[in-house]
Image 1 (cartoon, rainbow, N blue to C red):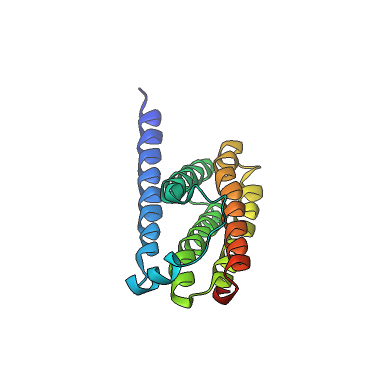
Image 2: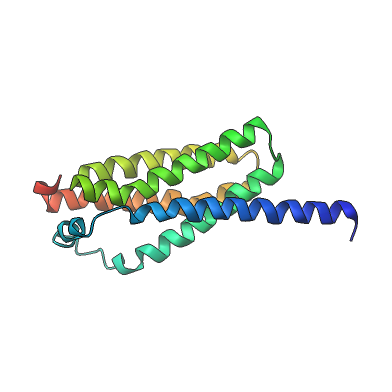
Length: 168
């Protein structure tokens, strides 16, 4: 293996580790809620078709992993450029908005807050997907699970407002 190939491999591993570490760290933000707030959420009515609720943490873990992979592909195209740093900031903003959904909704005891955050995340996710498409089709494809699931989650939260108008 040439020195250049080894250097490229080293850079790729380091960027993946940093991006993955940031993703993992930000994801811990979902833990910033009070246990008493969970009681409010548990009592809410859910749509009959919402059979997938137990799988939601696993689904979001996969989506965040795909997002980290997407960010890594983008970083590797032009590491350290201003454009790349701006895209990394957009990836970070998207994750922060997404992670804020649970603690903000629970603290405010408002499904409307969750719907707004979900909608904002959906818009950011689509914008990011379109922004990275010319850079890396693979990076854009890795963001599709977010775009699909974000829409489902936002719609589900909106539907829960219809079932729980007092929790709007």
